[in-house]
Image (cartoon, rainbow, N blue to C red; front, top):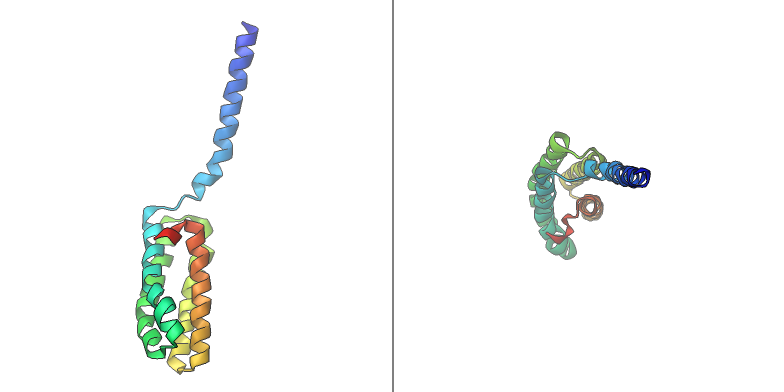
Length: 136
């Protein structure tokens, strides 16, 4: 009887340790609304990065800025409303990089605009990696 009780107690402790160890991962789960906002931002940024940027199409980049600003705003709102909290710095980074792009686009300097697009691209990839949205 003691051996069965000890085995059962060991099993319960192992299961409890597994559950407690897995719990922090649940805190990092990405809610659908947040995931969708990341994907939406990526879909708007993708033609900027793959078409306008390599062609140095400054008017094309500049025309995309309002859509990027709205998508970045939506991303920050989704993370703030739905989490997870560990994405907040990345979402803020995306938003700040887009606002920087908007500021330099208003000035019209080609080199600054292209540099700002690169910065926004890098910030976008951070949050894409954190949410596994790279396949979308």
